[in-house]
Length: 533
Image (cartoon, rainbow, N blue to C red):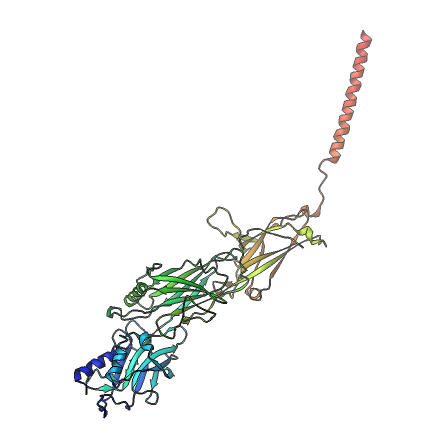
């Protein structure tokens, strides 16, 4: 028979295996001692009741006791799947308790003791997941949130023992335990900014905003793992992302590369991957900022996606991120070795899309020549523009200069017709799909314009910019937007007077007559001079 002191110490060790922030509670009477002398009845009925609550700034600030707590602020969270896994420890012996305590509160280490015995329940509208006596027995359990609703950060895994020492009477065991794990809502969000990048070769900005779980920071709790993972389109240069990582909201601070986080990039089969991994110091700063802040205190990662100048952006450019907010054994992501997976690790964002389409410009003329090569050599530039009643107003792609600059697309500013009077311009962002969202109503500002800067030989330049649109529907299907530009012959086909033939002849004849007249006069004067002498 163990002493009371020993029993109290064992009870305390059991309680300390609970994750920080989980309120735990036992009810009931002490179990009778078994014939072998243990104070725990191995055949006693056991239950585990999980109260799933939304994390607020007011709750989750004191350690749970295991008892039901009618005073706890608990807005129920439905749809959270809990899986309990029995650990291979015998709690009817001091050796079993010591084996569990040797993990020193490290849930991951305790997870190494997992058996194959599991039970799974999903919380209902009341936020409860109740494991009955038929589903549990005396032992220690790893409790994991194996599935959460969209935008819900899973709480940390924790270990709970059935039974626990009753905190209201430490001479007794309680076989009916209540725990109150908390979830932070609105876990992860992703936005794309592609409006400043209407043509290929321009940078696109992705912003990932993630909630920070609230932990009992002054009590020594820390976020043990925090990673933001971005699944990159293969066309993005993974080695030129230049991340900016900040804690935003209250207590805003910019985190330092290497000190607070590391960027790990890796090549996958169909995608590349970028992982922003908070260091121990970064997690400390995040824990502290969230504790001293509020629900708007979040981590923000900004990635600048760069492309090779001539990259083919036709179609959809999709990007999805994921958040790994704790060290749950369910998160098996290795940022250095993604393998062939395409699945988003952790809590995924909704994919954000950019849509790019190509334009095929066909040059023709009012003379409608059969030989279309006559229309080669025409040169065009592309601008963003606003359509007006009289034409269009061009918008400057580079406000830093004194001139109104055309777009640079695929490293080029000028596009020349060739072959049969055509030129393909790759690729322009869809006018009706901007910053990851479909525009239901287009305005006069939602246009591109073609400006002819050089006409084919024998033809006149276009008098005005030519507005056109690239639409998402065609971009998605990789169908070209077709634009036909009709030139007219120079001077609208009218012949000008010859530049000198008739005038030259007239002047030549007049000159000859003058010369002849001069000769006659000279001859007559000479005759008169001879006659006088």
